[in-house]
Image (cartoon, rainbow, N blue to C red; front, top):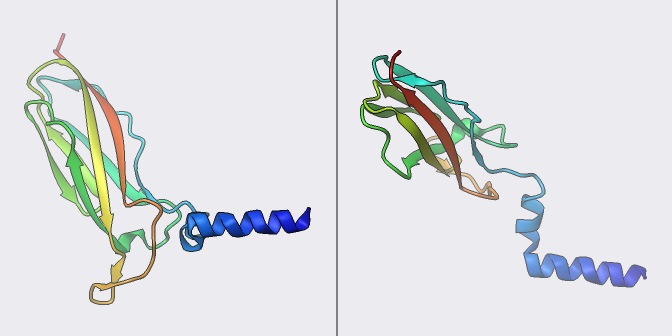
Length: 138
């Protein structure tokens, strides 16, 4: 019985690749914050921040973060990136319920003059969909 468990473990490591299996025991992957967007108004300035991080990675400041929206933002809104935070701002023009899908991609880690480290993440990207409700003023 013990020999069969050892063989099963050996084949698991061989098939999965020992390094990938061991490195992903600690779930290191990018993540976008769980934001519930406040309700926007067509006559008011709107602002919300979404922050990215890497789970179980104390050096997540050593990575480069790249953001991309799957669909365009509602008319009147724009975004800007400040390192690990992407901010959506502006005055929305049309009322409605909008699904905003955001992707984040990471590269690195870099430090000591941008020398690449051998750290391996389980994933190098993440996607999250947010809901933005835009109302007309009463």
